[in-house]
Amino acid sequence: MKLFFDKCKESVDRDSHPHAFSGIDPEAIYRLDLMRKKDSKWIKGSLDGLVFLRFSGEQTSVKVAAECKTRASHALKTEAEDRIREHVGAELYGTNKSYCFQISSNEHEFFHSLIFDKHYKQRNKSEAFQLLHNTFISGAAKGVLLVGAENHLITAILVTFEHKLLDWYGIVLDRLYDTYFKPFYDEESVDTLLDAEAEDSAGRRVMDALEFMP
Image (cartoon, rainbow, N blue to C red; front, side, top):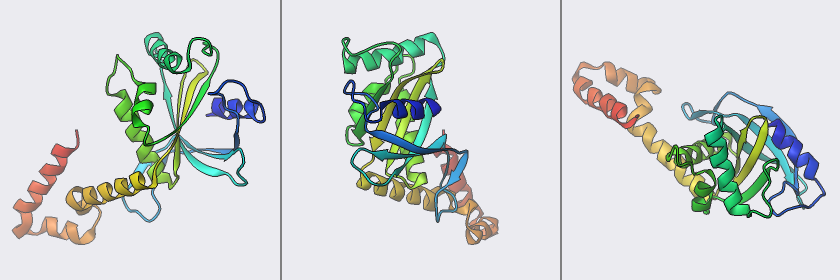
């Protein structure tokens, strides 16, 4: 996250290529661990951090959930760099440069293409889900995926999530809670689990939960 902070500071009030970090002024970075969503007993997540960014033309900063990913091996680093080169073009690409993409969550295909990995084809889905989940938990409307390797920030993908998407995600989590997880958080439901008459029904609910979680 410090690399992201530094790149933004370097680019304040300075335009360069279209995918530079200009126009983003970082005001604070907080490293986090486990966070629970406000007013929720069970919606939690492990956030890498929260950053407060002030965008060009704005008077106040906004809260942004940060997710950091490392492409540790040479193959993964090369794969990540290839994706960026495809989008910025060979004339703008440089191995020592860092790139920032500001997109909306409705551009999900573009987001997936930026992090596609032929060595791990589920990466784009898993990392997109992590960013959505952690943004929802933090109560932010923006999330940033920071992809780096060997002390170098390859790209920052700053996503503005549509309010409708965040609202629907909350509805999905509420449904999961009511269907699978409520017995583990609600005292009355725990009593029901221990009720002999409900033992078979409760057992099926627990098994359903175990089948749902891979």
